[in-house]
Length: 429
Ligand code: EPZ
Image: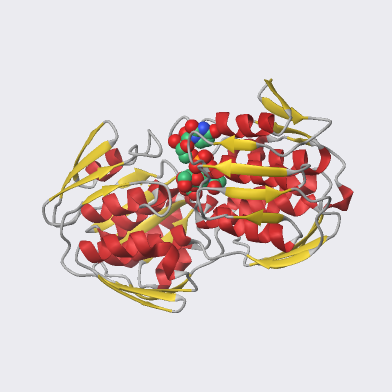
């Protein structure tokens, strides 16, 4: 079983290039089937979740050509099945984007119920409410969800929660519905805007993406496009916290600094120096102070950065309080951090953190994608050797994670046998 072997204690220093946003890539890939013409997508991250989605597209007849590691061409004229299933797709959250895409184009879709990281109950009631409002009949049976209708018609939908997934799914179905759809209390995350821009580049008529109210006027069909996915703000933020936690100095390149404002603000507040220019953000660590953080929908502090800030605050002077307000089960990694010496108590959706001066290495498991990455940062900041298991979770969303960290001076290797692990230990001793 592959794991990371890590010898911590070195400040991470240097430059790191950020890839395309996974959470934009997933809906964009699904939406690419909505035209019968070819779609060229650039800055596609080469991570497990996007690769599973590409396989799923091929599984229903979409032609997929990988022009290079980060460029993909799809052709949606040859869809031969409206059923998306299989063990891999079941494991990723993004598979539910086939519902909106297929329902919009073919008025029917059946998709295996979505999985994804175990961070909470992750309801899909708002997606269902949206599809029903557009005139679809939605049924769930045998682990599959089906949405179908003869007539998809625009509607006025008020979301009870500003859900990223529901906003995106409804938007996809609505672009090919008859008439006008208004989504109120829509999610405003950058990947929602990116999907809207992508659909508009195919001839859709979406206005207001990135605000609370998205207005969509249905069009008859979508056409070919060439599109570049936005940089991944969560990947970028992860390296920014890696700089802070290891006492380092990292320049993250190819980012949109605006998307990182809440992260930059917190890093400045806790004592780091953050410099921004065009598509670059540099974080220089300083002595870390405590703070309070509450995760929230964009532009609030992202839930996907919560484990990374907790790991960092675990090393900050004083008592910090971090409240998770988006997912109810996102502190499972704290147990591993405590094994590394952290002094953290979780009460309900709040973590109370008494900063310590240094973690110590331990054998730990990645419980999910972002927590896994955060634990790797903890191990890099820690004194001595750590191993991080279950790294398949991390590879869902971070391209070349250990290689990028190595370039920043980290002593980290991906090993898949006891022999390789011992070799790593010998090298560092
Ligand atoms: C997306 O998940 C991301 N996943 C998550 O990224 C991210 O954490 C999350 O948005 C929040 O930003 C993808 O883009 C594939 P939501 P999603 O619907 O769409 C509740 C990562 O690490 N809700 O915005 O599933 C839900 O329970 C991951 O990359 C309902 O109640 O998130 C949650 O409390 C993990 N009913 C809140 O809304 C619904 O119908 C936000 O969920 C839908 C959601």
